[in-house]
Length: 116
Image (cartoon, rainbow, N blue to C red; front, side):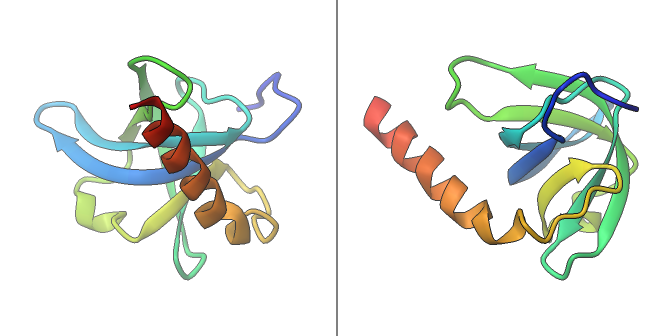
């Protein structure tokens, strides 16, 4: 699925959990682009292996620094994706994004602490 966003969808994953009756949810922060319902994305693990999933729900509870939750169709258990740290637009080349994930997470954590 194509988006109208000038930047491809890239999402830094912070956590995973399971909602009984709904499925697996990833939480984190978008680094670029826009997530859309029905969008097919790839989850990348620490070795660069991709797991194909589909976004079936999007939840944002508040401010820009508040993590976003993405409900996914594809994984049946958290264990299938627990090593993943990045969600990206299907087929996106990711070599330029991987080195900045930790720096981005640190920046978001610092912003969150300053708001407390």
